Length: 92
Image (spheres, rainbow, N blue to C red):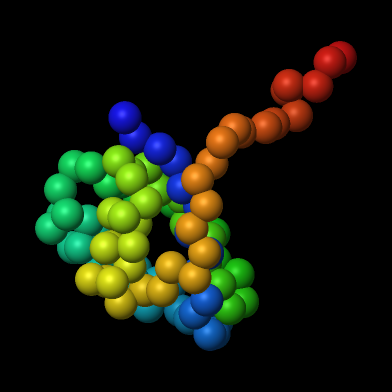
């Protein structure tokens, strides 16, 4: 069974990088994901000034850390998502 994780990565100046550089980051990440197989999947990331917040599906947290190690991108914080909330859940 897969679990969803949010990974906080401290990467100084990432938000100031041009799109070409961000595409290179995605390529590097995808190459490592290919090596790791089908037990881990990157869904998307949010880029802020000095951090990225990445959402992954994975068999376990160890795979998240292995991806970080192999890709060279830090995993400063890894948290398993327990629930997803959105505005449609509130009573009318």
